[in-house]
Image 1 (cartoon, rainbow, N blue to C red):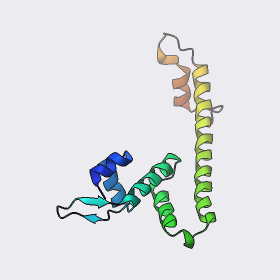
Image 2 (cartoon, one colour):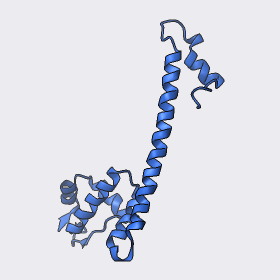
Image 3 (cartoon, rainbow, N blue to C red):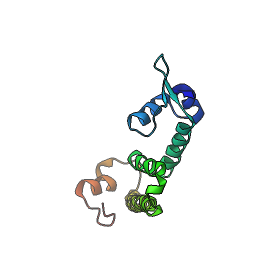
Amino acid sequence: MYRIGELAKLTGVSNDTLRYYEKNKLIAPAGRTDAGYRMYEDEAVRQIRFIQRAKGVGFTLSDINELLSIQLEKTEHSCHEVKTFTEAKLADVQQKLAELNRIKLALEKLNEACCGGPESAEHCSILQALETGDLADTRL
């Protein structure tokens, strides 16, 4: 059994994060001491590591909550359900990457159009494009 501080050190997350996970029903203490300290079992360590790995690949805490509930009742769920989470997350990441690439290209075009000289910014092509909306080539 681990007190919250011990669990925090063991898993590399803060006490506040553990309380947050508990509040959001991602982990639960096995009980409390007479003094009111939360006590956690080894299962909490496994769950926190699961949460950390899932966060590391981009799942939201809501997704992780769902994945944890599936993990706890594996026989009641299919691999298809779990794969659906991964496919949705992958599609989301691909969409974000496309958006970031579009932004990158637009910024490159804006940057290339500017002389970057020491003269006054009165005629700065970047400011003008942003002001007038003349960003046809950048699709912003």
